Amino acid sequence: MGHQSEIEKKKYRNWVKGGLAYKYLKQGLDGFSDDVVKQEQSRILGSINCTPGTICNQCIIERLRPIHACRTISAGNYECPWGQRKCNCLHLKKKKCRLKVCDFIMEEILQSHESTPPTPNWTNTDIQKWCTEPWEVAKCFINAPGYSDKTKAAEIDISGLLHVFINNINLHSHLACSMAGNNIFIQVRERRNKLFHSNTMEMEDLEVAKCIDDIVRILEDPKELSGRPEAQEAVRKLKQLKESKFIITTNNEVDVCKEALLFVSQKSDELKQVIEDGKIEVRYVVDTYTTKAKESIEKCQNAAVKEFNEHSTSLYERVKKLETNIPERMEKLKTDISERFGQIESDVSSVKERVTALESKVREVRELDAIRDIYRRHFDYVEGKQGNQVHFQKMLIMIFE
Image (cartoon, rainbow, N blue to C red; front, side, top):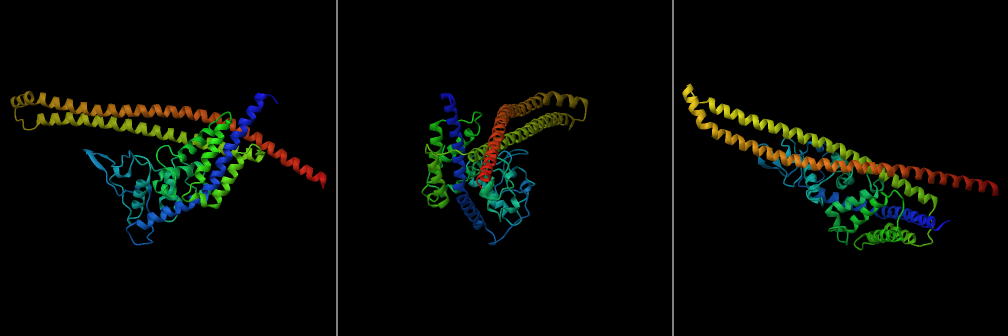
């Protein structure tokens, strides 16, 4: 084998090792995640000001009004004190929970979210199970969609688990490491994204070493994690992974390729949904402000005509009234229209930024789909290799029986 081929093979082995490192991280985090998520749900339920044991399973997320109230910024226009653009508090016809349970839990989720403004992902959750299923609350902290049918840590990929720890500030108390800024959890999550965005399926020696070391740092967190047997076992496997004599099996390849293919497919589908939601939002903003602009202009025009017609009993009085009021009314009309169009220009600028962001997402989807095709072909290859090995082993058994 040539020198260049040997280098490429080593980088591919590193890529597989990187994938295995995240597999071991998940094995070490699953039980811990279930425990802290359950504790967080118990804390929330225990702090609700109602009869202990009260359970609500009737509310619907789209219709639930949160405890916090919106602020009035102008006639018919409101803003969320949390800074959320699509908060339920902006719609006054939403209803509070009749048992005062679900709206309290919603408020707790908002207060517990790390981002400003808070951005819970309500698409992942079933609000009617908030009182009975701990992960229905926890899944609100996973940024990406696609987790609505997951009920425990074992069913959630490592990216989703990392999101929960990063985004829920109450879970930070279970960790000794600092969760401020670009913390170790964020770095590990971003490195996984980079790992599975590689169309060459290669990783440098220093990269894979850093990847493994950071994962070990998480699992050896001294607050609670380091004392858990499953975390200790995962660390043992990770340290073996760093050894030069570690053997990459075909089964290892299949596992990592399958995980990479799943990741890229999910990410592509997620971005496609973001693009569709963005298109709907852009159309809504354009239609809304176009309608408001027309209504504002018509209102000013009608007011000017009404002002002229009222209290005028003769042609002479109407003319005098017209001469007196038209400059003033026209100036007010001009000011009102100018203010309205100033707001529209601001909103149009925001829409343009949104469209630019969507165009970037479209390009990213194309890149991901290309990577997915590469991963699919390679997965078919290693899966076929695995099948051939199993067949060969069976043949050997038959020969020596």
